[in-house]
Length: 49
Image (cartoon, rainbow, N blue to C red; front, side, top):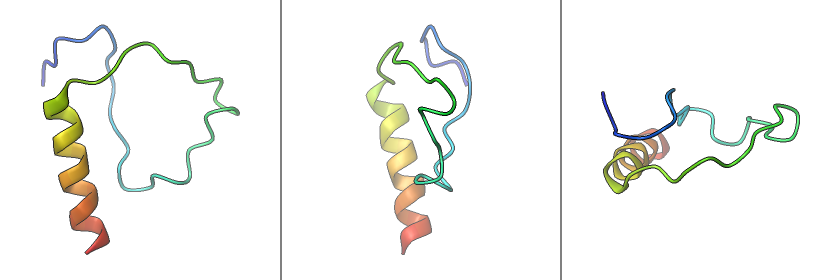
């Protein structure tokens, strides 16, 4: 899916609390488009039901 953003990759919404951003030396680059966030939240909600 082309999101029109600078970054490429995946959103790991199946394990939201297990990603250690400090250990991975993560840094903020840009916000995801609203439709990507909406899709991730819908998938996460399905997992939590």
